[in-house]
Image 1 (cartoon, helix red, strand yellow):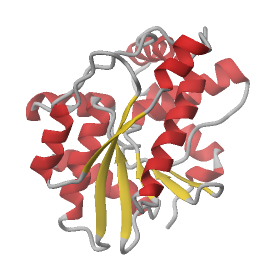
Image 2 (cartoon, rainbow, N blue to C red; image 1 turned 120 degrees about the vertical axis):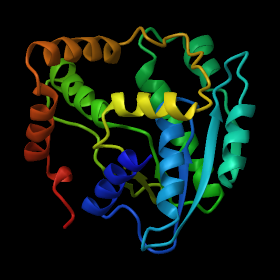
Image 3 (cartoon, rainbow, N blue to C red; image 1 turned 135 degrees about the vertical axis):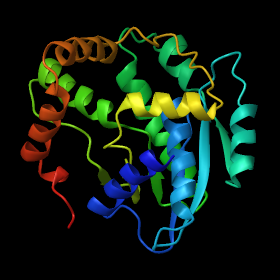
Image 4 (tube, helix red, strand yellow; image 1 turned 180 degrees about the vertical axis):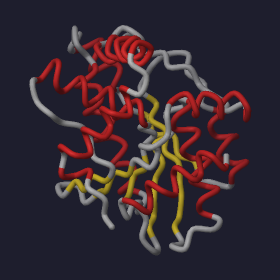
Length: 237
């Protein structure tokens, strides 16, 4: 916890993520990343100079066989309000539109549903579980498949919805989250998405693993290049 907390605190401070009185929703998917973000953010809440309110929002995508009760129990143990929001995203993407490359549309629908659910509850910031490896993978995806230098930002203000997205795990490698999840026995709810594990991102993840094995430190060098190239990644201080 202390290791992840220090990295979250650094990111929050570097990019001015949390202001006094903020009302923040954590997008709780049930995966290790979002569970860890919620747990660490709750720990941060206890001593951070700017007081803030936390709630958790989980989207029911419409996949059969999903049991979200472990997430509700987890939130109750942390004393964080939990909201389960039903959607028809799975039906829209896979049953009605039968998308062959579903990830982009699914991500857009999920973002819209999560942001709307947050606003309905008076929560104007949304905390996401994107970590260090997600940053590098997205950076590589944009270059290889879109021919541009791009990545999501640590802090993103969506002016059309008046919602601010926060990514406080940008300094945390995925391996550290896996270790934390195993040590604390996080109640991970398995993703039943039909496309899970069969995506361009999964390919890029494998490619980066090979590159890191052959050229130790390549991920960190890519991260440094990203921060140099993208204005949104300049430190707030």
